View 1 (spheres, rainbow, N blue to C red):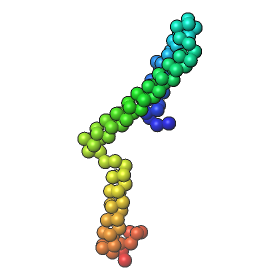
View 2: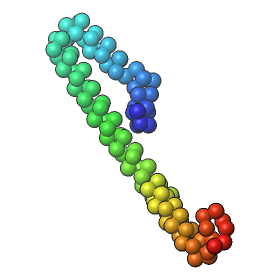
View 3: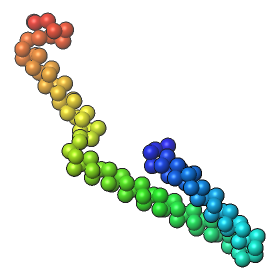
View 4: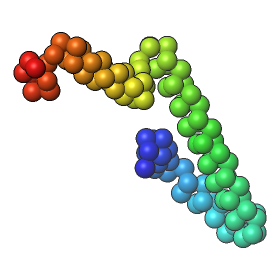
Length: 107
C-alpha cells in the first residue's frame, strides 16, 4: 500500500463515507423511494466517482510534490545514485593516479 492509498483509506474510514452512503441508499430503498436496482446503481456510480476523485487527487498531489521538490532543488534518488557512482569512479581514478591501492598502501 502506498502513501496515497493510506491517506485515502484514512480519510474514508475517518468519515465513514462509504458506509454512510450505503446506509442512506439502503434507507431510500426501504422507504420505497428507490428500487433495489436503482440503489445498487447509485452505490456503484458513487463508488466509481469516489475512486476517480481519489485517483485525480493522488495525481495532483504527486504532481505538486514533484514540482515542490524540483523548486527546492532536491536531487531525486536516481540523480543521487548517478552522482554517487561518479564519485566512486573519480575516487578510484584519483587513487590510481596517486599510486594508492584499495587498502590505502602506496604501490
